[in-house]
Image (cartoon, rainbow, N blue to C red; front, side):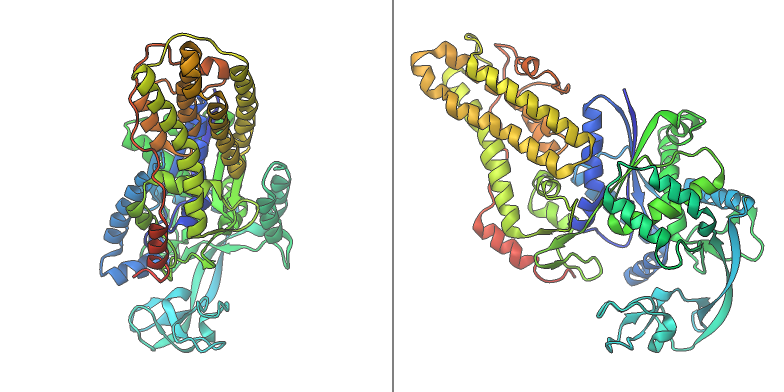
Length: 572
């Protein structure tokens, strides 16, 4: 039995995520976690909400709530939506937890001891009306490039030009609207990533099995221009983890917090401590996943994320772990994804464009979305969601192939043999050929899933469903029954066992449908069907079942057109 630690990039707290966010991290991570559990491995699957930084403060202000209250509420909302999509986290934590506070401060202290943190005096915009320094996003004004009047101090959303706050025309505070701004000096801490460039470079080079997307992004940051730069790890904000050197105060850093991109990845580790504390477990129970001196040396650690998060997970977070000098577990495999676009444009949280996770669950069950998103995962390139493609995929794959097979075999059995697995007959050449084909396809499916090749796994699973349909079509038990009911009984018995076979194999992709099938078959045997021949006789003659409800309803043209219109604008 292997031990596999899985983390998904943690979603930001400021609102509900869209389907592009889902397929870029949490959903493929869940697919892999479910598969590994199905193979009998010990899995720890962790995720959390990312709760610090400027956008959290702005979102809370917009909602008219204290930021801590806003984050607590949105954590519950995101946890509920994750449950709705059947995301099987062992723990869904919070980066604002006491555990993450303590661990982030601990890492900062260790990095300081190692001489990897330096103090830098910077110039930043200060708002006299607000009595605080303003991060770039807290400053609004007119873009000097396109004239957009609500450009932010880091970027204009209208023309996408990168900006400094001092570039803006008529700058004002995004908090109060005050134009009483001035530039002042402030002191911050920087992580000396440049000092670890060679160590990080060698570590990236050792990861020969990583996706090219992952390593190419890391190498670009390491070598382009002036190479890997030191990075600020503190901010002048109220909301966040107070800057401390371990448990001690940090002179000159009073009133400052750690930068969200420093503390957010540390939450992966803190989340395991949260899990242990929430379940009455000892520190040893979480440390065996994260500390190589306490049992984690045999753990395989896999991360899932969108490509925009790659630099922080291949460079900044490893620099934190390696720089601490402590025996923390480093990632073994980093699976990154390109972007999912929406109907000729881009999904956008800030602009409310596309289908958001809560809206998706309002119109269809999770399995419809899980299947389409995973079977179209943006692995080698960006992919695009269109309503036509979604309708076609659901109707052809889920309704016509899998759903149709289940309906035909269960209803035929009920009409001719009753609601139990029929007795009599034996396998012949057709059945032997099917078992051989399924064995070959099952091995390919397993290899793709182990390699985290999401689209190839979906294609192979669909081919396994198709093989059953083709067998049923050519065996034609409804015709055979007239001349040889015993032979038809053997065919139907195999068909009913195929349903269980499909339910187990499909559970990582479509867990709700899989559970329905197992319930209809009156079976709790979800053991992995490594031996296909044995798996196709797991339900014995006489075993009772019920005909399940329609597994997947087809999407009508009217529904598709309605949704297309409904989601063409922006979300309020």
